Image (cartoon, rainbow, N blue to C red; front, side, top):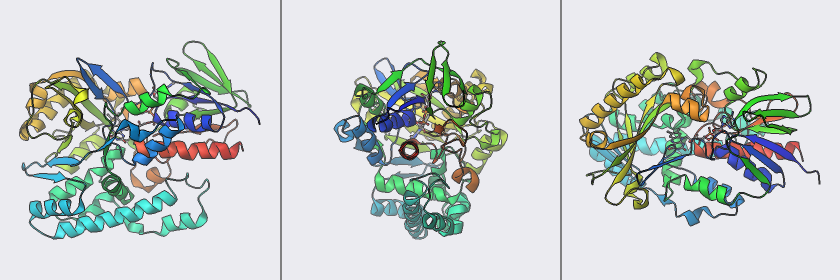
Length: 487
Ligand SMILES: Cc1cc2nc3c(=O)[nH]c(=O)nc-3n(C[C@H](O)[C@H](O)[C@H](O)COP(=O)(O)OP(=O)(O)OC[C@H]3O[C@@H](n4cnc5c(N)ncnc54)[C@H](O)[C@@H]3O)c2cc1C
């Protein structure tokens, strides 16, 4: 057997999962990571007895995580993941609320009580059915392989012909067809933000996200989601050599092999490279020879996150709470057209210590507060942060939660400029290229360059896109492709 060697640049979730898959096939992997630890955007911050996840706070499709952990000889279910139910407490601008659980009869009842009509209950069930059809179709096609690489022609035709308008049409217009009440519309219009996109520009195919979340559940891992990374790193196979604090600063080829230089001066050589960094980072470090430079309009949203330690008990709080802005279209118009933080942001509040007392000192709560923000990278200054926090504070106050920021100790802040700097995320965009229109959603930057030697891509910057489940699918797709190419 030929001994294969591969270099993986970036130890985000996609880089880790690809390394495990290739190592499992007997390859020798060198995993280069600019920061001192692995995980990328799936990261952790600890302070004053509080433990925070700084990135993802909700996981779907747990079987994908189970699959990856098993490659490191670990059982995901031994981490005692919890299915969070109710999934969300939604608070609207008029102060009405909806508790979104995991039970169809219960959600139907909640919608009936809130709207006082059967119309949106029927719309909810029909919308889920649409999500199911798109999800089933995606698992046969989009989630299994990259477009036009090895799609079975009949699957491709099924995707193209399938409820056409409903998949390739406007997401928000689809919502308008299924729902009448503006508050219920706001709940379901929020799902494209899971991939950093606006519901007013995303395709209806993203209707698979609410279906996937409801049927497969929204999960939390005790100790924080970063425990997934810790478990993998504790059992990293011997044929994966992890190189922390190894920032790749240039990548060139001699026609046969890649010559990869790190900031330390060290050079790595390999016939095959997998980039878990965004295609724009590859563009930058290869002098524009490989990867892609994104246009500003093609980037997904960034975010502002405040990690706060709250000393006292909190009333009426849930693991996941969303307090909606008064004008959703205006919020996305600010972010995507004006590239400004919205006057009135929708705010997401995550308090894992409600389900897991180990992540905060006794009697305290660790709170993750997040609002969507434009991907403007280093143009985001402290002035922007102060203004954003002021507006978040106003929104929280409006829904009786002003204490969350005012009476708490703000321990850490993440902004678009920090996301850009720490993760090399282009202009702080969290999900790489935005899923606006069918072209950007379906034809993302490719998983393999046509040039020689072979360069592959994995993670949120490539197919099928950002978010932890799709990043794990990306690792499956690219690993399969590599193993086929070198069989
Ligand atoms: C605030 C926030 C909230 C989120 N919430 C959720 C959520 O609730 N649910 C969900 O599913 N997803 C969520 N996500 C998205 C999710 O975290 C990402 O989609 C996913 O983790 C990205 O994985 P990736 O494989 O693309 O790699 P990344 O995480 O982007 O990792 C890339 C790695 O490459 C390294 N790197 C960059 N440049 C270099 C270089 N030159 N040399 C060497 N290494 C380099 C970086 O340091 C990083 O470790 C959230 C993200 C953030 C930031």
